[in-house]
Length: 91
Image (tube, rainbow, N blue to C red; front, top):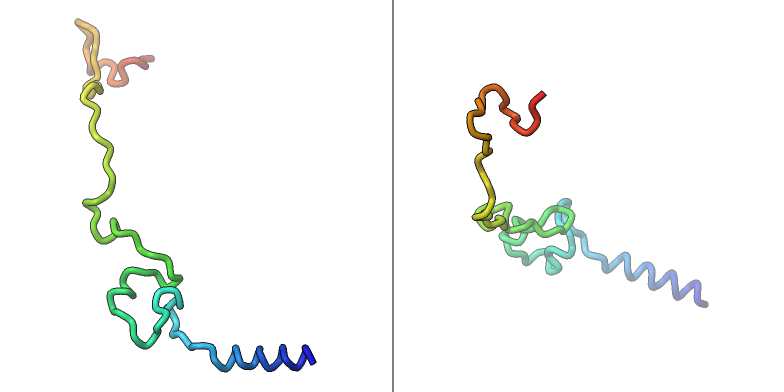
């Protein structure tokens, strides 16, 4: 009896399953025929959202510049910088 019920339920699931076209994930558009075209542009074919910085790189987080950082290399007095461009490591 349970085997027959299982088979009937399995057939019902297969018969009622929706067909999605290739490249469209069910999580992106659950109401498949009625989808917004912008929705397809915001998700990959696997259903993963595309980050906003892909479309707008100006919103990437940028570390602030350290005002106390020493940008230029300091050489000792009377030292020719051309003789040792890697100043602390002169061989």
